[in-house]
Length: 236
Ligand SMILES: C[S@@+](CC[C@H](N)C(=O)[O-])C[C@H]1O[C@@H](n2cnc3c(N)ncnc32)[C@H](O)[C@@H]1O
Image (cartoon, rainbow, N blue to C red):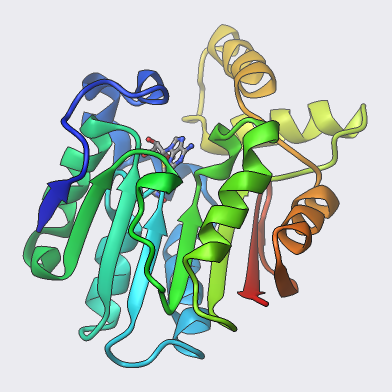
């Protein structure tokens, strides 16, 4: 495996993923995302409906390497290109994929640093809520541009109603699910504040509409685990 394209350095998003946090990153998603292991299985199954045995997969927001490892383990012929703006998270991905590294190329940067493909499928898991609203359409278009016609994109991130009082209730549910039992109420309040102000969360209707506007069709919701939603969509 190699990490290429840009020299290692701090990126615009890496502030959220510091070395200290990275050490603990791999414990986070299984605790915070309901049905996390099943989610990987569903993504693999949905991609495999259209991806050939020796298919090429673009993994957007590949830092940490959890989906790279799960997909590589399940599909021994697939080849992967992963892109992520955080050098620390890419380093962790390199460790996580371990024995599957020969089938994985990692690229430092935003989506525009991903190879042009064309790819048989793409994923973007637990990443889009870090992308500001005005960059999301273009990010989806860039993913679309790299896919073969009819190729699937699996997109999974935080998405829930944005009108109050539902928005605050969903933020509270999100924080409560991921928190350890008996967590300090002050920490929970700080976490609710952070989720509400630092992430970009859209309604599920708006997320699905953005996929269509970026050129995807057959947009279907395949995953809903509390605050997390997942869509499968196909490059038209
Ligand atoms: C919560 S982690 C998810 C990592 C992995 N997909 C997983 O499911 O475990 C979010 C990742 O998105 C990356 N990221 C943040 N902004 C990004 C962007 N604009 N484009 C691509 N990746 C981004 C972060 O560096 C981080 O590695």
